[in-house]
Image 1 (cartoon, helix red, strand yellow):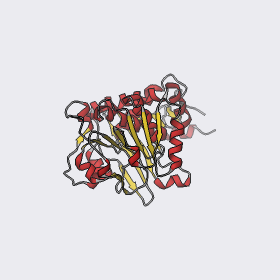
Image 2: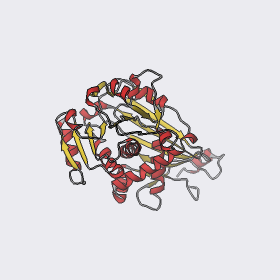
Image 3: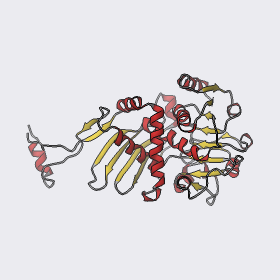
Image 4: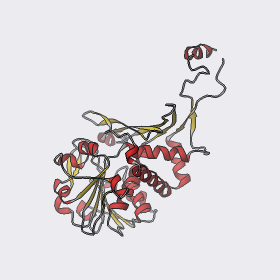
Length: 348
Protein backbone atom coordinates (compact mmCIF):
# COMPACT_ATOMS: atom_id res chain seq x y z
CA UNK A 1 0.00 0.00 0.00
CA UNK A 2 1.45 3.36 -1.05
CA UNK A 3 0.56 6.39 1.06
CA UNK A 4 1.61 10.03 0.81
CA UNK A 5 4.69 10.80 2.89
CA UNK A 6 2.80 13.48 4.81
CA UNK A 7 -0.96 13.42 5.28
CA UNK A 8 -3.14 16.49 5.70
CA UNK A 9 -4.43 15.90 9.22
CA UNK A 10 -7.06 17.96 11.02
CA UNK A 11 -6.84 18.63 14.78
CA UNK A 12 -9.97 17.42 16.60
CA UNK A 13 -10.92 18.49 20.13
CA UNK A 14 -13.24 15.99 21.77
CA UNK A 15 -15.51 16.72 24.72
CA UNK A 16 -13.00 15.07 27.03
CA UNK A 17 -10.12 17.12 25.67
CA UNK A 18 -12.18 20.32 25.80
CA UNK A 19 -12.81 19.72 29.50
CA UNK A 20 -9.11 18.98 30.06
CA UNK A 21 -8.22 22.22 28.26
CA UNK A 22 -10.64 24.21 30.45
CA UNK A 23 -9.15 22.76 33.62
CA UNK A 24 -5.60 23.36 32.44
CA UNK A 25 -6.32 27.04 31.78
CA UNK A 26 -8.85 27.60 34.60
CA UNK A 27 -12.49 28.29 33.78
CA UNK A 28 -12.52 31.95 34.81
CA UNK A 29 -9.29 32.64 32.96
CA UNK A 30 -10.69 30.91 29.87
CA UNK A 31 -13.90 32.94 30.08
CA UNK A 32 -11.83 36.14 30.16
CA UNK A 33 -9.74 34.94 27.22
CA UNK A 34 -12.83 34.08 25.17
CA UNK A 35 -14.40 37.46 25.95
CA UNK A 36 -11.23 39.13 24.71
CA UNK A 37 -11.32 37.18 21.44
CA UNK A 38 -15.02 38.01 20.92
CA UNK A 39 -14.40 41.67 21.71
CA UNK A 40 -11.51 41.80 19.23
CA UNK A 41 -13.70 40.35 16.49
CA UNK A 42 -16.56 42.75 17.30
CA UNK A 43 -14.07 45.59 16.78
CA UNK A 44 -13.55 44.36 13.20
CA UNK A 45 -17.23 43.48 12.67
CA UNK A 46 -17.44 45.07 9.24
CA UNK A 47 -14.83 42.66 7.82
CA UNK A 48 -17.06 39.62 8.33
CA UNK A 49 -19.58 37.93 6.10
CA UNK A 50 -22.86 38.16 7.99
CA UNK A 51 -26.05 36.21 7.48
CA UNK A 52 -28.80 34.98 9.81
CA UNK A 53 -28.23 31.38 10.76
CA UNK A 54 -29.72 28.74 8.49
CA UNK A 55 -32.45 27.11 10.56
CA UNK A 56 -34.55 23.98 10.12
CA UNK A 57 -37.50 24.16 12.52
CA UNK A 58 -39.70 21.32 13.68
CA UNK A 59 -42.44 20.95 16.26
CA UNK A 60 -39.90 19.75 18.82
CA UNK A 61 -36.93 22.02 18.18
CA UNK A 62 -34.52 23.53 15.70
CA UNK A 63 -31.31 22.51 13.93
CA UNK A 64 -29.11 25.34 12.69
CA UNK A 65 -25.93 26.13 10.81
CA UNK A 66 -24.06 29.32 11.75
CA UNK A 67 -21.43 30.32 9.16
CA UNK A 68 -19.15 33.35 8.80
CA UNK A 69 -15.77 34.39 7.39
CA UNK A 70 -13.34 37.27 7.82
CA UNK A 71 -11.78 36.60 4.42
CA UNK A 72 -8.85 34.65 5.86
CA UNK A 73 -10.62 31.98 7.89
CA UNK A 74 -14.07 30.46 7.54
CA UNK A 75 -16.01 28.96 10.43
CA UNK A 76 -19.34 27.32 11.02
CA UNK A 77 -21.19 25.72 13.89
CA UNK A 78 -23.84 23.02 13.79
CA UNK A 79 -26.19 23.44 16.75
CA UNK A 80 -29.58 22.17 17.81
CA UNK A 81 -32.11 23.51 20.31
CA UNK A 82 -34.60 20.96 21.64
CA UNK A 83 -36.23 22.08 24.93
CA UNK A 84 -38.10 18.78 25.28
CA UNK A 85 -34.79 16.91 25.51
CA UNK A 86 -34.29 17.71 29.20
CA UNK A 87 -37.31 15.62 30.19
CA UNK A 88 -35.81 12.71 28.23
CA UNK A 89 -32.44 12.97 29.95
CA UNK A 90 -30.80 14.65 26.95
CA UNK A 91 -29.10 18.01 26.42
CA UNK A 92 -31.26 20.86 25.12
CA UNK A 93 -28.33 22.10 23.04
CA UNK A 94 -25.51 20.17 21.36
CA UNK A 95 -23.00 21.50 18.88
CA UNK A 96 -19.79 21.02 16.94
CA UNK A 97 -17.79 23.44 14.84
CA UNK A 98 -15.18 23.72 12.12
CA UNK A 99 -12.60 26.34 11.18
CA UNK A 100 -11.06 26.39 7.71
CA UNK A 101 -8.39 28.25 5.78
CA UNK A 102 -10.00 30.41 3.09
CA UNK A 103 -6.94 30.25 0.81
CA UNK A 104 -6.91 26.45 0.48
CA UNK A 105 -10.40 25.59 1.67
CA UNK A 106 -8.85 22.99 3.96
CA UNK A 107 -10.27 22.63 7.48
CA UNK A 108 -7.76 23.46 10.22
CA UNK A 109 -9.85 22.56 13.29
CA UNK A 110 -12.82 20.36 14.18
CA UNK A 111 -14.12 20.61 17.71
CA UNK A 112 -17.00 19.84 20.02
CA UNK A 113 -18.96 23.01 20.73
CA UNK A 114 -21.55 21.99 23.30
CA UNK A 115 -19.19 22.91 26.13
CA UNK A 116 -17.54 25.63 24.07
CA UNK A 117 -20.87 27.29 23.20
CA UNK A 118 -21.78 27.52 26.89
CA UNK A 119 -18.42 29.17 27.54
CA UNK A 120 -18.58 31.62 24.61
CA UNK A 121 -22.20 32.54 25.33
CA UNK A 122 -21.31 33.39 28.92
CA UNK A 123 -18.20 35.28 27.83
CA UNK A 124 -20.25 37.33 25.34
CA UNK A 125 -22.87 38.13 27.99
CA UNK A 126 -20.23 39.39 30.39
CA UNK A 127 -18.44 41.34 27.66
CA UNK A 128 -21.73 43.11 26.87
CA UNK A 129 -22.39 43.74 30.57
CA UNK A 130 -18.94 45.33 30.89
CA UNK A 131 -20.15 48.03 28.49
CA UNK A 132 -23.83 48.21 29.46
CA UNK A 133 -24.34 47.34 33.14
CA UNK A 134 -24.38 50.03 35.85
CA UNK A 135 -20.94 50.83 37.21
CA UNK A 136 -20.14 48.76 40.28
CA UNK A 137 -22.72 46.04 39.54
CA UNK A 138 -22.03 43.18 41.94
CA UNK A 139 -25.35 41.30 42.21
CA UNK A 140 -27.11 39.31 39.50
CA UNK A 141 -30.48 37.60 39.36
CA UNK A 142 -30.10 34.32 37.46
CA UNK A 143 -33.59 33.32 36.34
CA UNK A 144 -33.45 29.89 34.74
CA UNK A 145 -30.91 27.61 36.40
CA UNK A 146 -30.26 25.08 33.66
CA UNK A 147 -27.07 24.20 31.78
CA UNK A 148 -26.06 27.82 31.08
CA UNK A 149 -26.53 29.26 34.56
CA UNK A 150 -23.18 28.45 36.18
CA UNK A 151 -21.23 29.60 33.11
CA UNK A 152 -23.15 32.89 32.99
CA UNK A 153 -22.53 33.48 36.68
CA UNK A 154 -18.81 32.74 36.56
CA UNK A 155 -18.30 34.92 33.49
CA UNK A 156 -19.95 37.85 35.26
CA UNK A 157 -17.70 37.18 38.26
CA UNK A 158 -14.52 36.96 36.19
CA UNK A 159 -15.19 39.91 33.87
CA UNK A 160 -17.56 42.24 35.76
CA UNK A 161 -16.65 41.58 39.40
CA UNK A 162 -19.90 39.87 40.40
CA UNK A 163 -20.03 39.03 44.12
CA UNK A 164 -23.54 37.68 44.64
CA UNK A 165 -26.01 35.67 42.55
CA UNK A 166 -29.70 35.19 43.31
CA UNK A 167 -31.09 32.03 41.73
CA UNK A 168 -34.61 31.14 40.64
CA UNK A 169 -36.07 28.39 38.49
CA UNK A 170 -39.55 26.90 38.30
CA UNK A 171 -37.80 23.60 38.96
CA UNK A 172 -36.38 23.75 42.50
CA UNK A 173 -34.04 20.87 41.69
CA UNK A 174 -32.37 23.00 39.01
CA UNK A 175 -31.81 25.81 41.51
CA UNK A 176 -30.35 23.38 44.04
CA UNK A 177 -28.05 21.98 41.33
CA UNK A 178 -26.81 25.44 40.38
CA UNK A 179 -26.31 26.49 44.01
CA UNK A 180 -24.38 23.29 44.72
CA UNK A 181 -22.11 23.79 41.70
CA UNK A 182 -21.37 27.40 42.63
CA UNK A 183 -20.98 26.81 46.36
CA UNK A 184 -17.17 26.78 46.53
CA UNK A 185 -16.41 29.33 43.81
CA UNK A 186 -16.16 32.56 45.78
CA UNK A 187 -19.70 33.90 45.40
CA UNK A 188 -22.61 34.55 47.71
CA UNK A 189 -25.33 32.25 46.37
CA UNK A 190 -28.97 32.86 47.34
CA UNK A 191 -31.76 30.46 46.37
CA UNK A 192 -35.04 32.31 45.75
CA UNK A 193 -38.65 31.18 45.60
CA UNK A 194 -39.88 33.59 42.92
CA UNK A 195 -38.48 35.77 40.15
CA UNK A 196 -39.59 38.81 42.15
CA UNK A 197 -37.45 37.68 45.06
CA UNK A 198 -34.52 36.93 42.76
CA UNK A 199 -34.36 40.45 41.30
CA UNK A 200 -34.36 42.19 44.72
CA UNK A 201 -31.17 44.25 44.89
CA UNK A 202 -29.81 42.92 41.59
CA UNK A 203 -28.28 45.32 39.08
CA UNK A 204 -27.99 42.63 36.38
CA UNK A 205 -30.99 40.48 35.48
CA UNK A 206 -30.19 37.39 33.39
CA UNK A 207 -33.02 35.34 31.93
CA UNK A 208 -32.19 31.94 30.47
CA UNK A 209 -35.17 29.59 30.28
CA UNK A 210 -35.63 26.71 27.86
CA UNK A 211 -39.33 26.36 27.06
CA UNK A 212 -40.24 27.35 23.52
CA UNK A 213 -43.08 29.76 24.20
CA UNK A 214 -43.86 33.45 24.38
CA UNK A 215 -43.38 33.59 28.13
CA UNK A 216 -43.35 36.56 30.51
CA UNK A 217 -40.49 35.61 32.80
CA UNK A 218 -40.15 39.29 33.62
CA UNK A 219 -43.30 41.41 33.58
CA UNK A 220 -43.19 45.16 33.04
CA UNK A 221 -43.87 46.07 36.67
CA UNK A 222 -40.99 43.87 37.91
CA UNK A 223 -38.25 45.93 36.25
CA UNK A 224 -37.26 49.26 37.74
CA UNK A 225 -34.83 51.90 36.55
CA UNK A 226 -31.09 51.49 36.51
CA UNK A 227 -30.66 47.79 35.69
CA UNK A 228 -29.07 45.81 32.90
CA UNK A 229 -31.06 42.90 31.47
CA UNK A 230 -29.13 40.06 29.88
CA UNK A 231 -31.85 38.25 27.92
CA UNK A 232 -30.34 35.09 26.45
CA UNK A 233 -33.23 32.60 26.55
CA UNK A 234 -35.21 33.92 23.58
CA UNK A 235 -33.35 32.43 20.63
CA UNK A 236 -35.87 31.22 18.06
CA UNK A 237 -39.20 32.30 16.55
CA UNK A 238 -42.04 32.00 19.03
CA UNK A 239 -39.74 32.03 22.08
CA UNK A 240 -39.49 35.13 24.25
CA UNK A 241 -39.04 35.85 27.96
CA UNK A 242 -39.81 39.53 28.49
CA UNK A 243 -42.98 41.58 28.48
CA UNK A 244 -43.14 44.03 25.58
CA UNK A 245 -43.45 46.92 28.05
CA UNK A 246 -39.93 46.27 29.28
CA UNK A 247 -38.57 46.59 25.75
CA UNK A 248 -40.41 49.86 25.28
CA UNK A 249 -38.68 51.34 28.34
CA UNK A 250 -35.23 49.97 27.56
CA UNK A 251 -32.35 50.80 25.29
CA UNK A 252 -31.96 47.54 23.39
CA UNK A 253 -28.63 46.24 22.11
CA UNK A 254 -28.34 43.33 19.69
CA UNK A 255 -25.77 41.35 17.74
CA UNK A 256 -27.14 41.21 14.19
CA UNK A 257 -30.57 42.86 13.76
CA UNK A 258 -31.83 40.71 10.82
CA UNK A 259 -31.37 37.60 12.98
CA UNK A 260 -32.52 39.11 16.28
CA UNK A 261 -35.76 40.44 14.76
CA UNK A 262 -36.62 36.84 13.86
CA UNK A 263 -35.41 35.06 16.98
CA UNK A 264 -34.91 37.52 19.83
CA UNK A 265 -37.08 39.44 22.26
CA UNK A 266 -37.65 42.13 19.64
CA UNK A 267 -39.56 39.66 17.44
CA UNK A 268 -42.63 40.85 19.40
CA UNK A 269 -41.98 44.51 18.48
CA UNK A 270 -42.69 46.47 15.25
CA UNK A 271 -40.17 46.00 12.45
CA UNK A 272 -38.94 49.59 12.89
CA UNK A 273 -38.32 49.21 16.64
CA UNK A 274 -35.02 50.97 17.33
CA UNK A 275 -32.02 48.92 18.43
CA UNK A 276 -28.27 49.52 18.66
CA UNK A 277 -25.76 46.99 17.37
CA UNK A 278 -23.35 45.96 20.13
CA UNK A 279 -20.27 46.21 17.93
CA UNK A 280 -20.96 49.93 17.52
CA UNK A 281 -20.76 50.39 21.28
CA UNK A 282 -17.52 48.44 21.52
CA UNK A 283 -15.89 50.52 18.75
CA UNK A 284 -17.14 53.77 20.31
CA UNK A 285 -19.37 54.60 17.36
CA UNK A 286 -22.52 54.51 19.53
CA UNK A 287 -23.09 55.11 23.23
CA UNK A 288 -23.91 52.27 25.61
CA UNK A 289 -24.94 53.16 29.15
CA UNK A 290 -25.59 56.88 29.51
CA UNK A 291 -26.67 57.24 33.13
CA UNK A 292 -27.57 55.37 36.31
CA UNK A 293 -31.34 55.33 35.63
CA UNK A 294 -31.21 53.88 32.13
CA UNK A 295 -32.46 50.34 31.51
CA UNK A 296 -30.12 48.56 29.12
CA UNK A 297 -31.13 45.27 27.51
CA UNK A 298 -28.83 42.91 25.66
CA UNK A 299 -31.17 40.89 23.45
CA UNK A 300 -28.72 38.10 22.73
CA UNK A 301 -29.53 35.21 20.40
CA UNK A 302 -25.94 34.17 19.68
CA UNK A 303 -24.26 35.00 16.39
CA UNK A 304 -21.78 33.19 14.15
CA UNK A 305 -18.97 35.69 14.76
CA UNK A 306 -18.94 34.70 18.44
CA UNK A 307 -18.48 31.06 17.43
CA UNK A 308 -15.76 32.11 14.99
CA UNK A 309 -13.98 33.85 17.88
CA UNK A 310 -14.26 30.72 20.01
CA UNK A 311 -12.90 28.55 17.19
CA UNK A 312 -9.96 30.93 16.70
CA UNK A 313 -9.24 30.77 20.41
CA UNK A 314 -9.26 26.97 20.54
CA UNK A 315 -7.06 26.76 17.44
CA UNK A 316 -4.51 29.03 19.13
CA UNK A 317 -4.63 27.42 22.58
CA UNK A 318 -4.24 23.78 21.59
CA UNK A 319 -0.95 24.37 19.79
CA UNK A 320 1.80 22.51 21.58
CA UNK A 321 -0.63 20.70 23.89
CA UNK A 322 -1.97 17.17 24.13
CA UNK A 323 -5.61 18.29 24.13
CA UNK A 324 -6.44 17.16 20.60
CA UNK A 325 -6.02 14.26 18.22
CA UNK A 326 -5.25 14.40 14.50
CA UNK A 327 -7.98 13.14 12.18
CA UNK A 328 -7.30 11.68 8.75
CA UNK A 329 -10.37 13.25 7.15
CA UNK A 330 -8.96 14.80 3.97
CA UNK A 331 -8.26 12.82 0.84
CA UNK A 332 -4.98 14.41 -0.22
CA UNK A 333 -3.21 12.40 -2.98
CA UNK A 334 0.35 13.17 -4.05
CA UNK A 335 -1.04 14.11 -7.46
CA UNK A 336 -4.17 16.21 -6.81
CA UNK A 337 -5.59 15.04 -10.16
CA UNK A 338 -5.28 11.36 -9.26
CA UNK A 339 -7.85 10.72 -6.55
CA UNK A 340 -8.88 7.45 -8.21
CA UNK A 341 -5.28 6.29 -8.31
CA UNK A 342 -5.00 6.97 -4.60
CA UNK A 343 -8.01 4.72 -4.05
CA UNK A 344 -6.55 1.96 -6.22
CA UNK A 345 -3.17 2.07 -4.53
CA UNK A 346 -4.81 1.71 -1.11
CA UNK A 347 -5.70 -1.92 -1.82
CA UNK A 348 -3.97 -4.34 0.51
